[in-house]
Image (tube, rainbow, N blue to C red; front, side, top):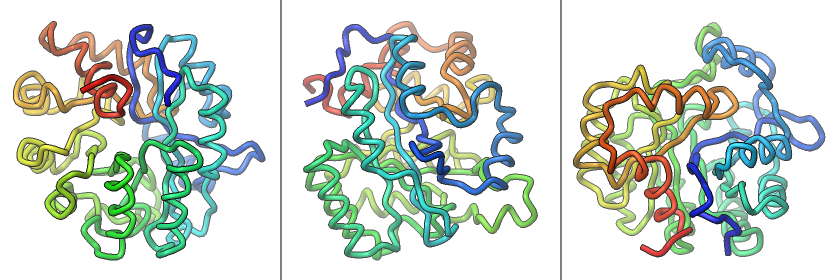
Length: 293
C-alpha cells in the first residue's frame, strides 16, 4: 500500500529517472549522458542520488514515479538496480513511487524478475525505451513481460518519439528512432486490452499518432514529460483540454528537465481551470491506484 498522501500533494510527476546507483554507477555511458545533458541544456545536478531526488520532491510537496532504464543488451551498460530503486521508494514512501525497467531481451529471466519486483518489492509499473533497448514494442518477445504487467495491474510506460539520448553523437550513438513510433504500442494495447499504458512525451514526429491511439484505446494515457510546455504542439494542448482531459499526465523527465521549469511554462498554457488539476495530479493518482476510481 502506498504511503503517498495524495491530498497533501501539489502534483504527481509520473516520469523521473534514477540516474545513478548507490555505488556511483550510471545507467548510460559517459558519452550518452553528456550528449543528453547538452540536448536538454541541463542546469543543476545531472546525477542526483535516490535520496537527493526524494528530498527534492519532498521540498516541493510532490510525489515522483521513478525508474531506471535497462538496456544492457544493446548498450553493454548495467542499469541502476531495480531493487535499489524500489528500496529507496520504500524508505521514502511519501514521495517516491517505484517503477522498474527490464530489458525485453532478458527473456524468461526478465519475466520472472518482473513478477518478483511487483510481488516482493511493490513495483507499480515498468519503463520501456524501445529506441535505446532496440526493439519494437509489438515484438512478440516482449509479450511475456506484458502478460505479467497486465495480470498484476501494473503500468507499462513506453518512451515515444525522438529521444535526447544520443542526439548529436555520430550516428546518434547507434540509437534508432523508428522503434518509438507510438503506433507500435497500438498493437500492444489491442492485444492486451486491460493493460494500463502510458505513452511518454510529446511524440514528435508522431504526435497525431499518439493522440489517435490514446483516443481509441481506453487503457492508453499520455505523459507530457521531456518537453517544456511552451513547445507543445497545438493539437496536444487541444486534446489535453478536451477528449483526453482524463488521460493526460504531468511528467517532467527529471533531472534533465526539472518540474520547476516545466510547471512555470505549463502555467502559461491555455489549459481550462477544471482540467489543470486533472493533469497535475488527479489522473495520475487514479491510474496508479493511489485513490479510488
